[in-house]
Length: 150
Image 1 (cartoon, rainbow, N blue to C red):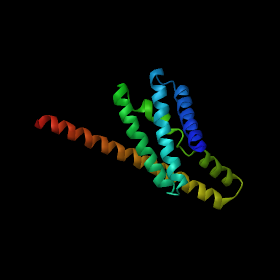
Image 2: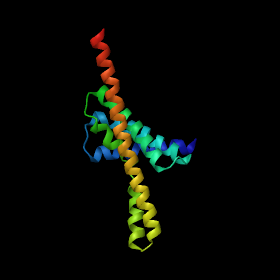
Image 3: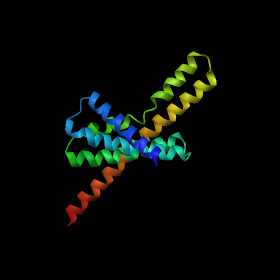
Image 4: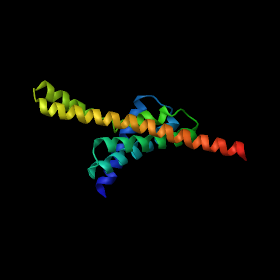
């Protein structure tokens, strides 16, 4: 239970600090932190159950983008205001740093492993973004079609 609370707090703090650094509107900072926490919890939960970096990143970015879409419609603000700060906890920055450090110290197998993980994470995030966009477009096209037929 303590580990879950710690991950919630750290996911929220990392998202809102990046939102503050990025100078997003004040009224969207807390919601951006909640969106980031949702994404981080999805990534963390799947990672500790050994689903792999691609599946974890895909599911996380899918959750993150869907929550960001809902937040953007509720607050009537652009999606990027919620999405970019929420994405910060998931971006594999420390993994890429360790991969470059291994490359510089001539530990090539560790560097290759790190770069492959960064690649799978980036591809998973991109696929999750594309999937969430397709899902939201389908939902809104069905709603629009339903309004026209009724």
